[in-house]
Length: 316
Image (cartoon, rainbow, N blue to C red; front, side, top):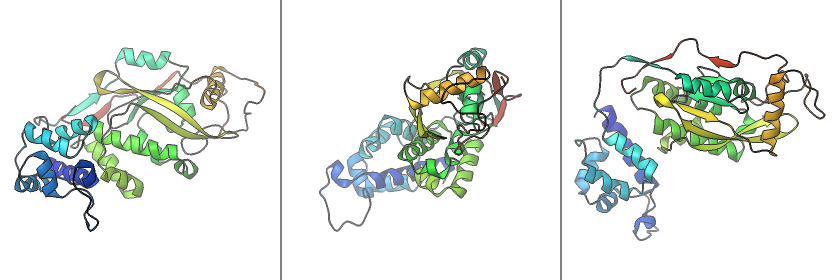
């Protein structure tokens, strides 16, 4: 069984287990021990023989036709995002010679990060590795620096953050996006999944659900001293070269906006605002809080890696 056939077979098993028989027209069976559908039930719904479906789930069949895939998509009740991922597994692009590729940020995208200084902005790739970030992003979440990984950062957050429902949603969001955007044969993806699988039981659980959803928008919870847990909304934008732009636009009047306003003013120079944090206070950080108070100097406008990120990845 090839690695891709194995992944396709594993996906079939995982999704089959998540479909309730009564949701697809089968009568309830109180004595049923199996979680999800039986192989014969999937085959019936997809319009294929039980023997052929068994071979697919065991990775013993050749590449299925698009007609078969369409039937399986209906049988497994896959939405548009899950179906897109499913087809990528079943119909992979032809292999090409493996060679290191350079992921670069185009000049227009770099200028966006430089000029979009009123909101936290950072650039990341399909594995959610950070390529560059503006000062507001780095001060708000000091862990967001070139070379860091957004999924790993999420799982490194403080325990009090991880207990919130917002973090549970965030964790599932970034893991599902890691699967959707990543390429199974990418060594960097395998490295991230391997590292988190070893140390994070929850990551293993979420990864085993085989959810695949693109990054669009959401909320990041962060602890702010004197305020508590603050929700920072984020929006994902597509950029040239297969990269993404993460933008955190906080609506005026929200706690997130007030925190960002204090940070914006701190980056411009010394401030003395009534009720604001002092030099000795703590502000925000992805691991709980970021010590050091407001920034009293203006660092370089952009933090970025000196050389392009190298990937030994044939799919790029």
